[in-house]
Image: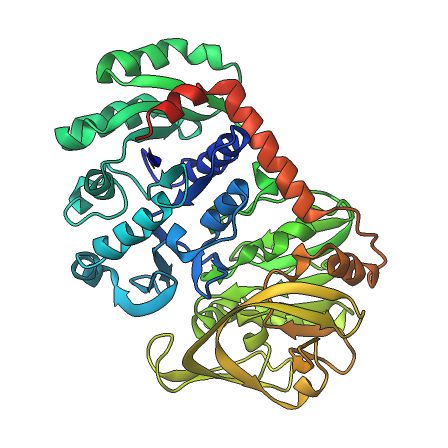
Length: 481
């Protein structure tokens, strides 16, 4: 009989996604067929699935840890923030609505059914399903109609291990306080707790660990030290973006837009020893030593165009190009490089038009149709083959498309300036392909040295070993039912 176990956190960003990925790999090492599941996720960093939908990037990484292709059942509800108060709602891989936060509670009442359908399909196929919660069960003001944490756990009768993040401080209060505020019937589902992200000697926390056990009567499964190589795995939250902080190498500056999406496009470049990646925060000028500036994907192209201009980055980009620098626009960044982004139907919000950067002779019109597909292409400048994926709304046209970035099934894709220093493409994930990445870097006299997919696999193995060394994984998995 298939079993399931759920990891919930004492708050957002306590490391649940990484722990689930590591436990999935540990279970796989034990010979179990295992699948990840997250009932509801909120992220603009999404992955295209084999069944033509999209799920959170963390679930795609967890699928990889399980040796599986990503599937929409692994994350049946995905919320993609488009504004400060509204999100696109994706159900089982397909957009169903765009709603304001205050209206989501009413829609949420209808979502438990598809969530449970997806969960039960996974349970019918695998020995074990490891579930990740969202936010915290201590947000009891959101408990009514909850599908992300204890509402799901109760509906599916799934036991819960609670994760606290000691690096934030106050982890004793995080865990003891969670038990204090949640419903006793919810608390009864908790089989124990995990202390995550400890720095230093874990034995120094022995008294605190015992205090939590005494106050809650929950067993502890262990204290997990900080996993130093976590930055090598794709991050889901823009708050988690980390780079090695090298002082030398080809300097690639990626603009950290307010609605940045699919920012893990930069991960393979950041791992190259001859490359220095800077994720440029708002309020900072584009540095004068930048070799390449990347305009990344965005969940709101028009909104982020306005954001980019408010930082003065439009002026900086022109100065960068005058110095002989290069620019790469990916997806939303591609759209921004043209003269105008038109949204007559209000696909991204209020209908209207935003002037683009005018660095390429192009224009974009937003449309309701969304292209979601894995793509094989050939990079025109180098002849290198590559694999990536498309995840965008809008149609881009204009004279500069006569100089394509790539060819897809014989058709032109993207655009390049006459001098070749401005490139634009709708293809996400292209730099994960070693052959293309190495060929692209060679144009800047940088020798590509890493093998990205193999490095991710070895990092997942190291993560599983890390958890085995510091958690009672056998006892944790034995809680599953």
